[in-house]
Image 1 (tube, one colour):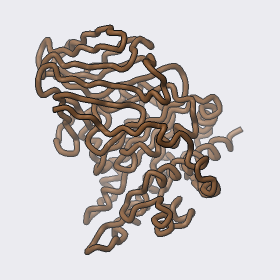
Image 2 (cartoon, helix red, strand yellow):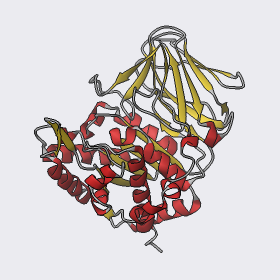
Image 3 (tube, helix red, strand yellow):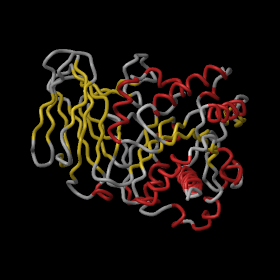
Image 4 (cartoon, one colour):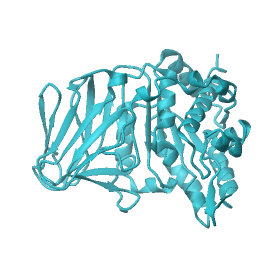
Length: 387
C-alpha cells in the first residue's frame, strides 16, 4: 500500500496574512499572554531569541495544531527558518507538516488515540513496516530550504527482535545501516552534523523494527514546529514514554513550548477539575525538566457542539477555560486564550462571517493564521517589556 500524504507548498501563500489582508493588522495587535510566572530571565531569553532570530517554538496539541496553519504563519512572520525540528515518523490521515513531505510504502501507523500502550514517543505516533522492504521517503519543502539541503538527522527506533535493521539512502546515494543494540527499547541514532542530503529514503529490511520520529536540524535559526493530533485530550500524553520525550526535546532545545488542549475535553458530559490539574502539572514538569523554556497554555476557541442541526456552546467550556487559567496560575507559567482573542476581534459570529472560523470549534486556515499573528505580537510585546 503506497500513501502520499497531504502537502501544501509554501508558494500557496508566500506571504503573511497581514501582508495579504492589511485590514487585519489592528486585530493582530489585540492578543494577550497572561503572565503568572514573572520570570524576567525567561522573558529576556525570549526577547534575545526574537532579536537574534533564534526563536524555537514547539506546539503540542489537538486539531488546532494538526493542520500546521499556525506554524506556517509564525514561520512566515519570523523568516530565517533553517531547521525542521522534531517531526512524527509518518503523518496520520488529515494531518500535515508544511515543512516536510512524506511518502510511504507498506508502513502502518500505530496511534495513541486508538491503542493504549505506554511507550509512544512525543506526539503518540509510531510507524511500523508491514513487510520487508517497506519504505518512507522524506523531502523538505524546497521552496523554503532549496534543493538537496543538508541537515543533521537523528532517528528514533526500536526493534522487536535481534538484528532487525533499517537502511537509509540519501540523495548522494550514501547508505547508512541502523541496527538497534537492544530489544524493545527506544534508541536514538545520530547520523552526524549536516551530513544528510535530502531527499532521504528509509527502508525497513524486516518488519520487526519501529520508527518513533526524527529530529532534522541545521545551523542556528528560527525553528517553529507543530505536533498536533486530531481528537486527543490533554491526558493522552500519559500513553507516551516520559524518558524518551525528555531526550527528544533535548535534540532541538525549544525555548517556547505551547500546550494546546481543551477542545476535546469539552465534548464529554463531565470534566474532573482536579484530575486535569494533575495531568497538566505532570506534563508541565516533564517538558520543563531539561529546559528553561517558556511554557504557555493555549486555551481553545469556543467549543460549539452540533445538537439537532444547531451549534451550541459546550456546557463544560467555561469550566475548562477557568481551570486552564487556574492551572497556569498554580504552575506559574503563561496562558494565551484563543476564545478571548476571538471575542476581542469581533466575536465568533463575525469570525464565521469573515470566513475566519467554522461553525464548530475549528477555525479556517486564515483564522488560524490570524490567531498565530495575535499570539506572536503578544509574545513580542510581553518579552520586550524587559530591558
